[in-house]
Picture 1 (cartoon, rainbow, N blue to C red):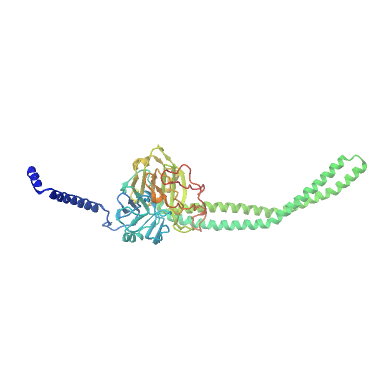
Picture 2: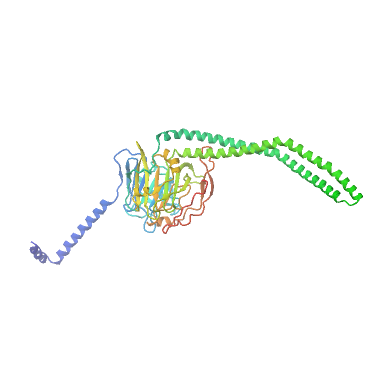
Length: 505
Protein backbone atom coordinates (compact mmCIF):
# COMPACT_ATOMS: atom_id res chain seq x y z
CA UNK A 1 0.00 0.00 0.00
CA UNK A 2 2.90 2.35 0.81
CA UNK A 3 4.47 1.71 -2.56
CA UNK A 4 1.15 2.26 -4.30
CA UNK A 5 0.65 5.58 -2.37
CA UNK A 6 4.08 6.73 -3.46
CA UNK A 7 3.24 5.96 -7.07
CA UNK A 8 -0.06 7.85 -6.78
CA UNK A 9 1.72 10.86 -5.23
CA UNK A 10 4.20 10.97 -8.11
CA UNK A 11 1.29 10.80 -10.54
CA UNK A 12 -0.47 13.79 -8.81
CA UNK A 13 2.65 15.92 -8.88
CA UNK A 14 3.92 18.75 -6.66
CA UNK A 15 0.73 20.92 -6.63
CA UNK A 16 -1.24 18.13 -5.03
CA UNK A 17 1.48 17.53 -2.45
CA UNK A 18 1.56 21.23 -1.49
CA UNK A 19 -2.23 21.26 -1.21
CA UNK A 20 -2.25 18.22 1.08
CA UNK A 21 0.51 19.72 3.23
CA UNK A 22 -1.41 22.97 3.56
CA UNK A 23 -4.55 21.10 4.55
CA UNK A 24 -2.61 19.15 7.18
CA UNK A 25 -1.10 22.35 8.57
CA UNK A 26 -4.50 24.06 8.68
CA UNK A 27 -5.97 21.09 10.53
CA UNK A 28 -3.11 21.21 13.06
CA UNK A 29 -3.53 24.96 13.62
CA UNK A 30 -7.29 24.55 14.00
CA UNK A 31 -6.76 21.82 16.59
CA UNK A 32 -4.24 23.97 18.48
CA UNK A 33 -6.58 26.96 18.47
CA UNK A 34 -9.44 24.80 19.66
CA UNK A 35 -7.29 23.40 22.47
CA UNK A 36 -6.20 26.90 23.41
CA UNK A 37 -9.80 28.11 23.35
CA UNK A 38 -10.84 25.17 25.53
CA UNK A 39 -8.06 26.03 28.02
CA UNK A 40 -9.19 29.64 28.41
CA UNK A 41 -10.76 30.28 31.86
CA UNK A 42 -14.47 30.97 31.83
CA UNK A 43 -16.88 32.40 34.35
CA UNK A 44 -18.47 29.83 36.62
CA UNK A 45 -20.69 29.77 39.68
CA UNK A 46 -20.79 26.89 42.16
CA UNK A 47 -24.05 24.89 41.97
CA UNK A 48 -25.03 25.67 45.57
CA UNK A 49 -25.99 28.54 47.80
CA UNK A 50 -22.88 30.65 48.34
CA UNK A 51 -21.77 32.10 51.64
CA UNK A 52 -19.70 35.22 52.24
CA UNK A 53 -16.36 35.20 50.38
CA UNK A 54 -13.44 34.53 52.73
CA UNK A 55 -10.59 34.63 50.24
CA UNK A 56 -9.77 35.20 46.59
CA UNK A 57 -6.92 33.43 44.79
CA UNK A 58 -5.59 34.90 41.55
CA UNK A 59 -3.48 32.61 39.36
CA UNK A 60 -1.12 34.64 37.18
CA UNK A 61 -0.26 31.51 35.18
CA UNK A 62 -3.87 30.61 34.40
CA UNK A 63 -5.17 34.19 34.32
CA UNK A 64 -8.03 33.22 36.59
CA UNK A 65 -9.50 34.32 39.92
CA UNK A 66 -11.42 32.03 42.25
CA UNK A 67 -13.40 33.14 45.29
CA UNK A 68 -13.98 30.82 48.24
CA UNK A 69 -16.47 30.72 51.10
CA UNK A 70 -16.35 28.38 54.10
CA UNK A 71 -17.39 25.37 52.03
CA UNK A 72 -15.22 25.79 48.92
CA UNK A 73 -15.14 27.74 45.68
CA UNK A 74 -18.17 29.87 44.81
CA UNK A 75 -17.14 32.03 41.82
CA UNK A 76 -14.54 31.80 39.07
CA UNK A 77 -13.68 34.15 36.24
CA UNK A 78 -10.92 34.93 33.78
CA UNK A 79 -8.71 37.92 34.59
CA UNK A 80 -6.06 40.04 32.98
CA UNK A 81 -3.05 40.74 35.20
CA UNK A 82 -0.07 43.00 34.59
CA UNK A 83 1.79 42.88 31.31
CA UNK A 84 5.55 42.45 30.98
CA UNK A 85 7.34 45.25 32.82
CA UNK A 86 4.19 46.09 34.78
CA UNK A 87 3.54 42.69 36.32
CA UNK A 88 1.00 42.18 39.06
CA UNK A 89 2.98 41.30 42.22
CA UNK A 90 2.56 37.76 43.53
CA UNK A 91 2.04 37.71 47.28
CA UNK A 92 -0.42 38.04 50.14
CA UNK A 93 -2.82 40.98 50.40
CA UNK A 94 -6.25 41.95 51.72
CA UNK A 95 -8.98 44.30 50.52
CA UNK A 96 -8.33 47.71 52.08
CA UNK A 97 -10.81 49.93 50.22
CA UNK A 98 -13.86 49.56 47.96
CA UNK A 99 -15.10 52.14 45.44
CA UNK A 100 -18.05 51.44 43.17
CA UNK A 101 -17.18 54.12 40.60
CA UNK A 102 -13.44 54.55 40.96
CA UNK A 103 -11.36 56.51 38.46
CA UNK A 104 -7.61 56.16 38.19
CA UNK A 105 -5.44 59.00 39.46
CA UNK A 106 -2.47 57.46 37.61
CA UNK A 107 -3.84 56.70 34.16
CA UNK A 108 -5.74 59.65 32.69
CA UNK A 109 -8.84 59.30 34.83
CA UNK A 110 -9.45 55.78 33.45
CA UNK A 111 -12.59 54.06 34.68
CA UNK A 112 -12.02 51.23 37.17
CA UNK A 113 -15.55 50.19 38.10
CA UNK A 114 -16.22 48.13 41.23
CA UNK A 115 -12.68 48.67 42.43
CA UNK A 116 -11.40 46.67 45.41
CA UNK A 117 -8.01 48.05 46.44
CA UNK A 118 -5.34 45.75 47.88
CA UNK A 119 -2.42 48.23 48.16
CA UNK A 120 -2.39 51.97 48.63
CA UNK A 121 0.11 52.47 45.82
CA UNK A 122 -2.52 51.43 43.30
CA UNK A 123 -2.91 47.65 42.95
CA UNK A 124 -6.58 46.61 42.89
CA UNK A 125 -9.17 44.19 41.56
CA UNK A 126 -11.67 45.90 39.27
CA UNK A 127 -13.81 45.49 36.18
CA UNK A 128 -12.01 45.95 32.88
CA UNK A 129 -11.43 44.64 29.34
CA UNK A 130 -10.05 41.09 29.08
CA UNK A 131 -8.11 40.42 25.86
CA UNK A 132 -7.33 36.84 26.96
CA UNK A 133 -3.83 37.50 28.24
CA UNK A 134 -1.96 39.67 30.77
CA UNK A 135 -2.48 43.27 29.67
CA UNK A 136 -3.02 45.56 32.68
CA UNK A 137 -0.63 48.01 34.33
CA UNK A 138 -0.45 45.88 37.47
CA UNK A 139 -4.07 45.59 38.59
CA UNK A 140 -6.22 42.49 38.26
CA UNK A 141 -8.96 43.11 35.70
CA UNK A 142 -12.12 41.03 36.02
CA UNK A 143 -15.12 40.84 33.68
CA UNK A 144 -17.30 43.93 34.14
CA UNK A 145 -20.43 42.00 35.11
CA UNK A 146 -18.50 39.64 37.38
CA UNK A 147 -16.86 42.55 39.22
CA UNK A 148 -20.23 44.22 39.69
CA UNK A 149 -21.88 41.04 40.98
CA UNK A 150 -18.99 40.47 43.38
CA UNK A 151 -18.67 44.00 44.74
CA UNK A 152 -21.39 43.86 47.40
CA UNK A 153 -20.42 40.37 48.56
CA UNK A 154 -16.94 41.18 49.88
CA UNK A 155 -15.78 43.14 52.90
CA UNK A 156 -12.74 45.17 53.94
CA UNK A 157 -10.05 42.74 55.13
CA UNK A 158 -10.98 39.84 52.81
CA UNK A 159 -7.84 37.88 51.99
CA UNK A 160 -6.50 38.19 48.44
CA UNK A 161 -3.75 35.77 47.43
CA UNK A 162 -1.97 36.35 44.13
CA UNK A 163 -0.11 33.17 43.14
CA UNK A 164 2.42 32.85 40.32
CA UNK A 165 0.97 29.39 39.54
CA UNK A 166 -2.29 27.62 40.25
CA UNK A 167 -3.13 27.33 43.94
CA UNK A 168 -6.14 26.27 45.96
CA UNK A 169 -6.93 25.83 49.67
CA UNK A 170 -6.67 22.29 51.04
CA UNK A 171 -8.03 20.99 54.35
CA UNK A 172 -5.32 21.20 57.01
CA UNK A 173 -4.78 20.57 60.71
CA UNK A 174 -1.80 21.17 62.98
CA UNK A 175 -1.28 21.66 66.73
CA UNK A 176 0.08 25.17 66.14
CA UNK A 177 -3.22 26.39 64.69
CA UNK A 178 -5.59 28.18 67.05
CA UNK A 179 -8.04 26.00 68.92
CA UNK A 180 -10.51 28.41 70.58
CA UNK A 181 -12.56 27.67 73.70
CA UNK A 182 -16.33 27.79 73.35
CA UNK A 183 -16.81 29.31 76.79
CA UNK A 184 -14.29 32.09 76.05
CA UNK A 185 -16.03 32.93 72.78
CA UNK A 186 -19.44 32.94 74.47
CA UNK A 187 -18.21 35.24 77.24
CA UNK A 188 -16.33 37.63 74.92
CA UNK A 189 -19.22 39.99 73.98
CA UNK A 190 -20.29 40.57 77.59
CA UNK A 191 -16.67 41.05 78.67
CA UNK A 192 -16.10 43.60 75.90
CA UNK A 193 -19.26 45.48 76.88
CA UNK A 194 -18.33 45.53 80.57
CA UNK A 195 -14.77 46.64 79.99
CA UNK A 196 -15.88 49.25 77.49
CA UNK A 197 -18.25 50.72 80.06
CA UNK A 198 -15.59 50.62 82.78
CA UNK A 199 -13.07 52.25 80.44
CA UNK A 200 -15.54 55.05 79.65
CA UNK A 201 -16.14 55.59 83.38
CA UNK A 202 -12.39 55.55 84.03
CA UNK A 203 -11.94 58.14 81.30
CA UNK A 204 -14.45 60.44 82.98
CA UNK A 205 -12.96 59.79 86.45
CA UNK A 206 -9.47 60.58 85.21
CA UNK A 207 -10.72 63.79 83.63
CA UNK A 208 -12.41 64.84 86.89
CA UNK A 209 -9.33 63.94 88.94
CA UNK A 210 -7.16 65.97 86.61
CA UNK A 211 -9.45 68.98 86.95
CA UNK A 212 -9.49 68.64 90.77
CA UNK A 213 -5.70 68.45 90.88
CA UNK A 214 -5.40 71.50 88.63
CA UNK A 215 -7.80 73.50 90.84
CA UNK A 216 -5.90 72.51 93.99
CA UNK A 217 -2.61 73.41 92.34
CA UNK A 218 -3.91 76.87 91.43
CA UNK A 219 -5.22 77.44 94.98
CA UNK A 220 -1.90 76.47 96.54
CA UNK A 221 0.18 78.46 94.07
CA UNK A 222 -0.14 81.66 96.17
CA UNK A 223 0.62 79.73 99.35
CA UNK A 224 3.68 78.23 97.77
CA UNK A 225 4.86 81.69 96.69
CA UNK A 226 4.28 83.05 100.21
CA UNK A 227 6.23 80.18 101.78
CA UNK A 228 9.13 80.76 99.40
CA UNK A 229 9.12 84.47 100.32
CA UNK A 230 9.07 83.72 104.07
CA UNK A 231 11.81 81.12 103.64
CA UNK A 232 13.89 83.77 101.90
CA UNK A 233 13.25 86.32 104.66
CA UNK A 234 14.18 83.79 107.35
CA UNK A 235 17.34 82.87 105.51
CA UNK A 236 18.35 86.54 105.28
CA UNK A 237 17.55 87.14 108.97
CA UNK A 238 19.52 84.08 110.02
CA UNK A 239 22.47 85.22 107.93
CA UNK A 240 22.31 88.70 109.52
CA UNK A 241 22.31 87.22 113.03
CA UNK A 242 25.15 84.85 112.20
CA UNK A 243 27.24 87.71 110.85
CA UNK A 244 26.60 89.83 113.95
CA UNK A 245 27.72 86.96 116.18
CA UNK A 246 30.83 86.50 114.09
CA UNK A 247 31.72 90.21 114.33
CA UNK A 248 31.10 90.13 118.09
CA UNK A 249 33.42 87.19 118.53
CA UNK A 250 36.14 88.92 116.55
CA UNK A 251 35.84 92.33 118.31
CA UNK A 252 39.15 93.50 119.96
CA UNK A 253 37.98 96.65 121.69
CA UNK A 254 35.14 97.56 124.00
CA UNK A 255 33.70 99.92 121.44
CA UNK A 256 33.75 97.27 118.68
CA UNK A 257 32.16 94.74 121.03
CA UNK A 258 29.42 97.22 121.97
CA UNK A 259 28.63 97.95 118.34
CA UNK A 260 28.58 94.23 117.48
CA UNK A 261 26.37 93.46 120.48
CA UNK A 262 23.91 96.17 119.43
CA UNK A 263 23.84 94.73 115.90
CA UNK A 264 23.19 91.27 117.31
CA UNK A 265 20.35 92.53 119.51
CA UNK A 266 18.63 93.97 116.48
CA UNK A 267 19.17 90.85 114.27
CA UNK A 268 17.97 88.30 116.81
CA UNK A 269 14.33 89.47 117.01
CA UNK A 270 14.13 89.74 113.24
CA UNK A 271 15.38 86.16 112.87
CA UNK A 272 12.95 84.93 115.53
CA UNK A 273 10.03 86.76 113.91
CA UNK A 274 10.90 85.38 110.47
CA UNK A 275 11.00 81.85 111.89
CA UNK A 276 7.66 82.33 113.64
CA UNK A 277 6.03 83.70 110.48
CA UNK A 278 7.34 80.78 108.41
CA UNK A 279 6.18 78.17 110.94
CA UNK A 280 2.74 79.77 111.18
CA UNK A 281 2.38 79.94 107.37
CA UNK A 282 3.47 76.33 107.02
CA UNK A 283 0.96 75.21 109.62
CA UNK A 284 -1.81 77.19 107.94
CA UNK A 285 -0.87 75.87 104.47
CA UNK A 286 -0.19 72.26 105.43
CA UNK A 287 -3.74 70.98 105.00
CA UNK A 288 -4.14 72.70 101.64
CA UNK A 289 -0.73 71.54 100.41
CA UNK A 290 -1.45 67.99 101.58
CA UNK A 291 -4.80 68.08 99.80
CA UNK A 292 -3.13 69.32 96.60
CA UNK A 293 -0.48 66.57 96.79
CA UNK A 294 -3.21 63.99 97.37
CA UNK A 295 -5.18 65.33 94.41
CA UNK A 296 -2.07 65.09 92.22
CA UNK A 297 -1.45 61.48 93.30
CA UNK A 298 -5.11 60.65 92.71
CA UNK A 299 -4.94 62.13 89.22
CA UNK A 300 -1.86 60.00 88.43
CA UNK A 301 -3.61 56.87 89.72
CA UNK A 302 -6.76 57.68 87.75
CA UNK A 303 -4.73 58.23 84.60
CA UNK A 304 -2.98 54.88 85.01
CA UNK A 305 -6.32 53.16 85.63
CA UNK A 306 -7.70 54.84 82.51
CA UNK A 307 -4.80 53.58 80.40
CA UNK A 308 -5.01 50.05 81.80
CA UNK A 309 -8.76 49.80 81.32
CA UNK A 310 -8.59 51.33 77.85
CA UNK A 311 -6.03 48.70 76.87
CA UNK A 312 -8.14 45.91 78.34
CA UNK A 313 -11.29 47.24 76.67
CA UNK A 314 -9.51 47.52 73.34
CA UNK A 315 -8.24 43.96 73.53
CA UNK A 316 -11.67 42.70 74.60
CA UNK A 317 -13.36 44.45 71.68
CA UNK A 318 -10.71 43.24 69.25
CA UNK A 319 -11.31 39.69 70.51
CA UNK A 320 -14.66 39.90 68.73
CA UNK A 321 -12.84 40.24 65.38
CA UNK A 322 -10.95 37.65 63.32
CA UNK A 323 -7.21 37.87 63.92
CA UNK A 324 -4.38 37.70 61.39
CA UNK A 325 -0.81 36.71 62.24
CA UNK A 326 2.20 37.18 59.97
CA UNK A 327 5.43 35.32 60.73
CA UNK A 328 8.47 36.47 58.75
CA UNK A 329 11.66 34.45 58.46
CA UNK A 330 13.39 37.58 57.13
CA UNK A 331 12.77 39.60 60.31
CA UNK A 332 12.35 36.71 62.77
CA UNK A 333 9.22 38.43 64.06
CA UNK A 334 5.53 37.76 64.55
CA UNK A 335 3.00 40.49 63.78
CA UNK A 336 -0.69 40.58 64.74
CA UNK A 337 -3.43 42.64 63.09
CA UNK A 338 -7.16 43.07 63.53
CA UNK A 339 -9.53 45.44 61.80
CA UNK A 340 -10.99 48.06 64.15
CA UNK A 341 -13.57 49.09 61.51
CA UNK A 342 -12.76 52.70 62.37
CA UNK A 343 -12.47 54.96 59.30
CA UNK A 344 -8.98 56.27 58.77
CA UNK A 345 -8.90 59.92 59.94
CA UNK A 346 -6.78 61.03 56.98
CA UNK A 347 -9.14 59.52 54.43
CA UNK A 348 -9.61 56.15 52.77
CA UNK A 349 -9.93 52.71 54.27
CA UNK A 350 -10.14 51.56 57.86
CA UNK A 351 -7.66 51.43 60.73
CA UNK A 352 -6.06 48.10 61.62
CA UNK A 353 -4.86 47.49 65.18
CA UNK A 354 -1.15 46.66 65.34
CA UNK A 355 -0.58 46.33 69.07
CA UNK A 356 1.41 43.07 68.99
CA UNK A 357 4.85 42.65 67.41
CA UNK A 358 7.23 40.17 69.05
CA UNK A 359 10.33 38.11 68.22
CA UNK A 360 9.62 34.54 67.18
CA UNK A 361 11.81 31.43 67.18
CA UNK A 362 12.23 29.69 63.81
CA UNK A 363 14.28 26.49 63.70
CA UNK A 364 16.96 26.51 60.96
CA UNK A 365 16.41 30.23 60.26
CA UNK A 366 18.77 30.19 57.26
CA UNK A 367 16.69 27.55 55.46
CA UNK A 368 13.82 28.66 53.18
CA UNK A 369 10.37 28.15 54.61
CA UNK A 370 8.16 29.19 51.66
CA UNK A 371 4.97 31.24 51.82
CA UNK A 372 1.90 29.55 53.28
CA UNK A 373 -1.51 30.99 54.22
CA UNK A 374 -3.52 29.11 56.85
CA UNK A 375 -7.14 30.23 57.15
CA UNK A 376 -9.85 29.33 59.66
CA UNK A 377 -12.81 28.68 57.37
CA UNK A 378 -15.54 27.73 59.87
CA UNK A 379 -16.24 26.35 63.31
CA UNK A 380 -16.30 22.61 63.93
CA UNK A 381 -16.34 20.24 66.90
CA UNK A 382 -12.61 20.73 67.48
CA UNK A 383 -12.94 24.51 67.39
CA UNK A 384 -12.00 25.66 63.90
CA UNK A 385 -11.65 24.02 60.50
CA UNK A 386 -8.51 25.21 58.70
CA UNK A 387 -7.20 25.24 55.13
CA UNK A 388 -3.72 25.87 53.77
CA UNK A 389 -2.62 27.61 50.57
CA UNK A 390 1.03 27.47 49.46
CA UNK A 391 2.17 29.97 46.84
CA UNK A 392 5.96 29.78 47.18
CA UNK A 393 7.80 26.55 47.78
CA UNK A 394 10.32 26.04 50.54
CA UNK A 395 9.31 23.65 53.25
CA UNK A 396 5.88 22.11 52.90
CA UNK A 397 3.13 23.67 54.99
CA UNK A 398 3.34 21.16 57.84
CA UNK A 399 7.12 21.37 58.18
CA UNK A 400 6.91 25.17 58.06
CA UNK A 401 4.65 25.23 61.13
CA UNK A 402 6.78 22.59 62.84
CA UNK A 403 9.78 24.94 62.65
CA UNK A 404 8.02 27.84 64.40
CA UNK A 405 7.54 28.38 68.14
CA UNK A 406 4.85 31.00 68.78
CA UNK A 407 5.29 32.74 72.17
CA UNK A 408 2.87 31.34 74.73
CA UNK A 409 1.70 34.75 75.91
CA UNK A 410 0.63 35.58 72.35
CA UNK A 411 -1.30 32.31 72.13
CA UNK A 412 -2.93 33.00 75.49
CA UNK A 413 -4.12 36.40 74.28
CA UNK A 414 -5.40 35.27 70.89
CA UNK A 415 -6.21 31.57 70.67
CA UNK A 416 -9.11 31.31 73.18
CA UNK A 417 -11.36 33.65 71.18
CA UNK A 418 -10.07 32.99 67.63
CA UNK A 419 -12.89 33.16 65.08
CA UNK A 420 -13.53 31.98 61.52
CA UNK A 421 -11.66 34.14 58.96
CA UNK A 422 -8.65 34.24 61.29
CA UNK A 423 -5.37 33.44 59.57
CA UNK A 424 -1.70 32.64 60.06
CA UNK A 425 0.73 33.56 57.30
CA UNK A 426 4.24 32.09 57.29
CA UNK A 427 6.73 33.50 54.79
CA UNK A 428 10.36 34.03 53.95
CA UNK A 429 9.45 37.60 53.06
CA UNK A 430 9.48 40.71 55.25
CA UNK A 431 6.37 42.83 55.25
CA UNK A 432 6.28 45.27 52.36
CA UNK A 433 6.69 48.97 53.05
CA UNK A 434 3.13 49.22 51.73
CA UNK A 435 2.02 47.71 55.03
CA UNK A 436 0.73 50.58 57.15
CA UNK A 437 -1.99 51.38 59.65
CA UNK A 438 -4.64 51.30 56.87
CA UNK A 439 -3.75 47.79 55.70
CA UNK A 440 -3.75 44.31 57.04
CA UNK A 441 -0.57 42.57 55.76
CA UNK A 442 1.09 43.31 52.42
CA UNK A 443 3.87 40.91 51.42
CA UNK A 444 5.15 40.20 47.91
CA UNK A 445 7.30 37.36 46.59
CA UNK A 446 10.74 38.70 45.78
CA UNK A 447 11.52 35.80 43.43
CA UNK A 448 8.71 36.88 41.08
CA UNK A 449 8.45 39.91 38.74
CA UNK A 450 6.88 42.97 40.38
CA UNK A 451 6.98 45.57 37.63
CA UNK A 452 3.49 46.92 38.32
CA UNK A 453 4.38 47.23 42.00
CA UNK A 454 7.89 48.68 42.00
CA UNK A 455 7.27 51.18 39.19
CA UNK A 456 4.48 52.83 41.16
CA UNK A 457 5.24 55.63 43.55
CA UNK A 458 5.46 54.14 47.06
CA UNK A 459 2.88 55.24 49.59
CA UNK A 460 4.11 58.42 51.25
CA UNK A 461 5.64 58.34 54.72
CA UNK A 462 2.24 58.59 56.34
CA UNK A 463 1.01 58.77 59.88
CA UNK A 464 0.62 55.47 61.69
CA UNK A 465 -1.77 54.58 64.46
CA UNK A 466 -0.68 53.91 68.00
CA UNK A 467 -2.58 53.14 71.16
CA UNK A 468 -4.06 55.91 73.25
CA UNK A 469 -7.75 56.76 73.35
CA UNK A 470 -10.31 56.75 70.61
CA UNK A 471 -13.54 58.18 71.93
CA UNK A 472 -15.03 56.03 74.66
CA UNK A 473 -15.20 52.64 72.97
CA UNK A 474 -11.79 51.30 73.83
CA UNK A 475 -9.98 51.75 70.50
CA UNK A 476 -7.05 54.08 70.85
CA UNK A 477 -4.91 56.14 68.54
CA UNK A 478 -2.55 58.99 68.19
CA UNK A 479 -0.57 59.67 65.08
CA UNK A 480 3.14 59.95 64.48
CA UNK A 481 5.47 59.66 61.52
CA UNK A 482 6.49 56.27 60.22
CA UNK A 483 9.89 55.28 61.62
CA UNK A 484 12.72 54.44 59.24
CA UNK A 485 12.53 51.02 57.55
CA UNK A 486 14.28 48.20 59.32
CA UNK A 487 17.83 47.85 58.12
CA UNK A 488 18.75 44.60 56.46
CA UNK A 489 15.23 43.86 55.24
CA UNK A 490 15.47 45.41 51.81
CA UNK A 491 15.24 42.60 49.32
CA UNK A 492 16.79 42.37 45.88
CA UNK A 493 13.57 42.60 43.88
CA UNK A 494 10.88 45.05 44.87
CA UNK A 495 12.83 46.98 47.49
CA UNK A 496 10.57 45.68 50.24
CA UNK A 497 11.05 46.76 53.80
CA UNK A 498 8.72 46.97 56.74
CA UNK A 499 8.09 49.95 59.01
CA UNK A 500 8.35 48.49 62.51
CA UNK A 501 5.84 49.28 65.19
CA UNK A 502 7.20 51.72 67.79
CA UNK A 503 7.56 50.42 71.38
CA UNK A 504 4.43 50.75 73.45
CA UNK A 505 1.90 50.10 70.68
